[in-house]
Image (cartoon, rainbow, N blue to C red; front, side, top):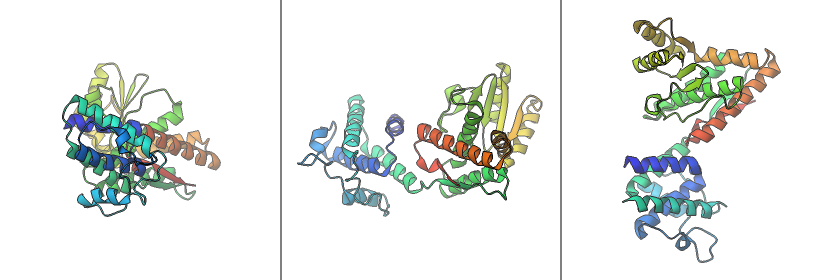
Length: 310
């Protein structure tokens, strides 16, 4: 099951199937696979005129959603009018056929995966920030994280705050240093599992970004030190004290730099904006633009994006 889910996640990320049109295609073609079996012939999944995907429409899509307790309408035409639907169908059929060639495919697992993506789509309103001259830049950062934490409370199991924090810091570093100085990864890519020295590795510095510092991140910092790297922990206001205490308890209090994310980002925005009002607005715009580019490239959940109200 894990193998199928991993393949689905990879396909979704590469082909960007998290939008409503492709989601409709995935749901309907999965139903065809259930009734016809795998492998599928994509030419048999076109209407007689050849201009639309067979069975793709609001009624069929909503019937699938209703079985899972979803009554909201995913797409008024069920993706039928999407110009890329036939291409999406062919790509998805090719993907399912590859899975089938490797072994049995549990289509209930496949369907459940796409239902999860539908839930994400409906929750997918971007976070919002507004640059208010009467408020500090630190509150701008705080507001984004607070929105992510609120959404996380309403969606148990989803780590919105951690993902926002990681990519916000990554975008800030890209704006400060220029793109291409280090690698980005999806939030779900664990440091320990991937063997990375930190969330970001720049020069001889390993940057660890976390909303809830624990002993595990301090131990990774110890490994960094033993390997000749300088570790940095970037965390929230609440996490700052915990990170400092844990570092002290581990005997590494003077070896690990711990930064609170609001200050870490806000000071850089002042510098990038050359301490001028117009410059700050441009700096924030650049930061949000880069953040959204990172989310587009490395995440499959569009609700992680930020809308900058100017």
